[in-house]
Image 1 (cartoon, rainbow over the protein chains, first blue to last red):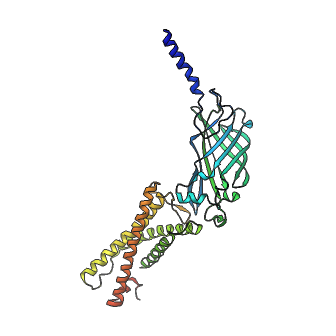
Image 2: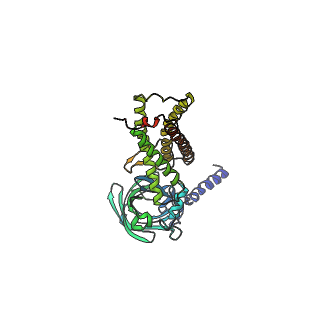
Image 3: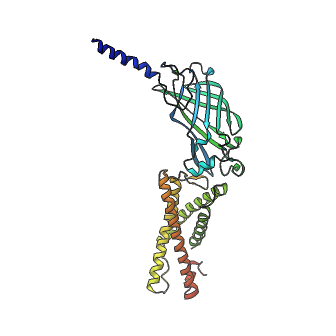
Length: 206
Length: 167
């Protein structure tokens, strides 16, 4: 073909790998392996991921969510035991959908989020249960308390995105959430259902 | 007749709770009062349905002798009260749903939400519920005043119509 067309075509082709090197916008810190290669390390996709909690107030289910959280994942589905996941949650981002309640959540009796703004989870073991299901065990640190936590997670993959779904029951009093006058479990139940849906890119095929 | 007094008690108490609790700071006590208020409201709705069914299936006593305008005022007041006995709790129920707090009757029976969760709608319904409740309170006061007028001033024994039948 004509030289000019060849040059334009080459320039177009050369720009494609450069665009692959753009990491997707996310709240995660870039892992070391964010090289311009298609198989990047797993990254949390903040848009589409959600972390919800449902408490029961005198029988009424009240749903809240954390709007800001981050996950660092190193995971090969073929070797799940070698996987690691670290989770951090901005407790100040907790929202029940009404400003009055959100302001309450930040107070010392609840999350005390000005003083202790972050909760974190660090995994110590990941076990494959078969059929895309895994059990992640580790420690949850929340409001100055650390407790063991084991969460069943199911993974599904579509279009390069791996979705991790899971839920567990958290006993709020173990972490002194809803303390003092709010420790009465007939007002707010002790058991809080935590549900999450996390989207990750860059996870190898299951 | 029993329903009349039972409902009168419940409505006055529930209204009182409502007025008191609305300005409380956020606390477990307020949560408790709100729950009781809602449970009472739903109970009033249920009992009012029974009351209405009774009223529709039983002929009330004939009007006591009184000027025509008083009879008309009485009938109008009673009609409006019946309407409000349903409108007030229904508005409250919708307000609770729109605010994202479904009602779980006495903490055990979840009630359906007839409206979506919507802040703007919740704000409107809150004002509606308040307005209707105060309108009802005004009518209740008039109703009580009129009944007392008949009993104490006219001395026409009107109050006896709402008492247990004499043996």
